[in-house]
Amino acid sequence: MKRIVIPILSLLMLSCGDDPLPKPKGYLRLEYPQPDYTKVDAPLPFSFEKNELADPISVKKSLGKTHGIDVKYPALKATIYLTYKAVNNNLDSLMRDAQNLTQKHTIKADEISSNLFENKKTNVYGMLYEIGGNAASLSQFYVTDSTSHFLSGSLYFYAKPNYDSIYPASEYLKKDIKRIMETVEWK
Image (cartoon, rainbow, N blue to C red):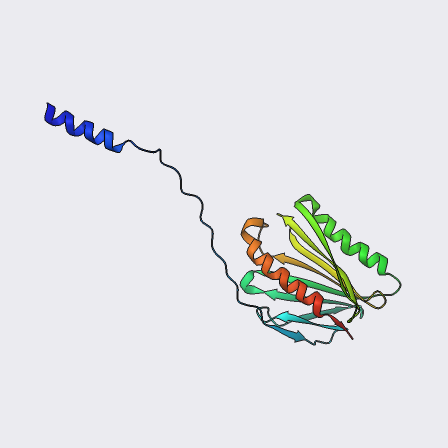
């Protein structure tokens, strides 16, 4: 009897220990290439630099004074949508429309921060909005020369908004948006 009881008690004593803990969730570590920028000199009233990671630019023209430009990033499943409009004594309404588009994201956004942009040398002034949370667009901006040109842009992903999972791609593309703003030159 002792031969059976002693091994069983030994096993019970050795098997007791810390309670098992579930493993934490693992996340992919996403790394993107160092950006390489080239000037886009399409038939537009302005030029800018885009990341080589993006597809070639497609320009959509409507009503002669409005241009839509899609800067597509298939590898990141994202697009920066640019809209150009000529200013005709309507700068206030163009700026208000751009700001209202950003404010529509407050329903899902945790925060919206704005960063003023100014480049006196190239006559480019604007605002960059960074939207935190599970909003449809995490970055929006506009730039203008205040008299003739107005360019607005929005970043959208081809996925259900999940801030944690698209954060690395969003941060990478935010740098591209800043580069677009910094390199806009009016024609």
